[in-house]
Image 1 (cartoon, rainbow, N blue to C red):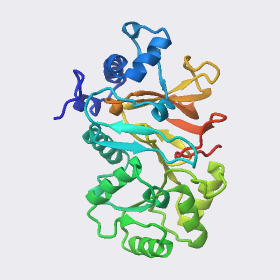
Image 2: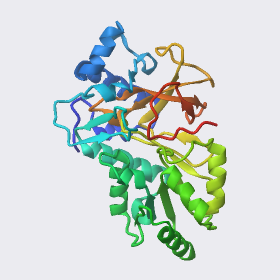
Image 3: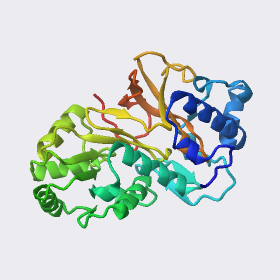
Length: 332
């Protein structure tokens, strides 16, 4: 067991199985980060909030995600093992996530992948991620690299621009009735669906990322209809993740995402960012990611969403004037 610089260890984070435990761990991490993450500490100070008076998760202030572009968001003095960076349009400042313990990230994505899908050893994993492979610092590529290494299937691997080779591989896997996941950036999946048409209903197609400036943005329903037709599947899966988070939420279809137990979505009022919304209104997405124990676990994103009673959520779009980023920007 490896330990974090607070009194809890990561085993407690990744074994959370109820709301009370989540609340207790989140509050303990908040108290630590409010003292040791300098940018978060300053932010809380300027809000005139006394951390010692925070007694529930709903009272916790969320750090605007833009601080990952302008500051080093760290709660530990440990030298970062890696720096993940966001994709960025020319001229835009990219976000940087300084990760001081890669084991935490690895445990987070491995446990979530196994929870929502399967042990990677048991499946064939194909990756169509050209724009991610063509730059450095992608946390998604780090995760997929590791999942591919864990997969025991000889046909698992990356496809850069080799769509014909991908088609041949998929046909072979279909014939052999092999459980397969294809993880692809949206525009590349569309390129494939327009050039080839297969009928592989058992295939899991997971889109991650947006158009990366390669294509015009599309509404989710239209996009998924094209992909479902092209791949012969009933639903398109999606991943909700970003550079600033060490955890991912997953959707089995229709744009409804679920979080692993150590991650939670709250909604804030778009006109009052310090106020949380109750009920089913749409609002700004605040993320609690307890895997971010060494940076900041409480982040106000620039995404708009809708929260359901069971904790699942939908992404509805982006705030006006927000930078275009790598995550899915589809609007219903």
